[in-house]
Length: 289
Ligand code: HBI
Ligand code: FE
Image (cartoon, rainbow, N blue to C red; front, side):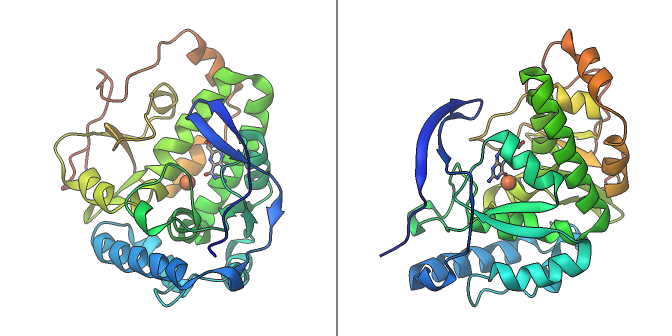
């Protein structure tokens, strides 16, 4: 019988009426995974590795190799942790699923990345609204081996712990930053614009759409512009933000955000599809502005 995650309750959040799980850390019940679970992993792994060739940034693809992830079976957290601890002193911890923001931030602030211990069902192959093991392990973990990005995610977590105390507006601004970088970020490279965001790399359709469709805006990274930009969780992005380097991301999180939040207080949010006069439009082929 397929193990199912322990749901505690459903709660109305900014992501809609979603299941909120028990917040404790759990051991990965690797021996309970069924053949179907491993087959879902294998199908998604093979499909995404194929679609990401020439689309994901080199750091993502090379780091995934370093973890020696393969289609053979769902990876063991303990195996990945040996590489991750040695690489950037991060650690994967098993969780039941989506966590309340403050718990999530506290993990990141302590270089712990929460990974759902369960994988989606075959009928959810193309989309599910919650982070499952595939999204977290395949999508998030490889970039945590990049030292600069690893520090950025910890800085983000620390910022989140502070923002949680400052209130809902600060939190909204900060989760937009996470959304448009860690989840849906693009990076300019000499070979053209490439993907590093976890929400993209774990989705076949969006891996193609984000680089090849004329529909979305591709805008040069701008912290305050991002913090004002709305997003929807159940559609492809209408705008993507393109960084020039991971150092640029890290530098953006060095200053204290409190004065930035204050400045943004009286500025209206920007709809996801809108271009603003000050936007630096990035053309997908070249990666130059
Ligand atoms: N919980 N397990 C888990 N994984 C996430 O990626 C996650 C989360 N809770 C909140 C969240 N992400 C985002 O809202 C962050 O911006 C805080
Ligand atoms: Fe995620």
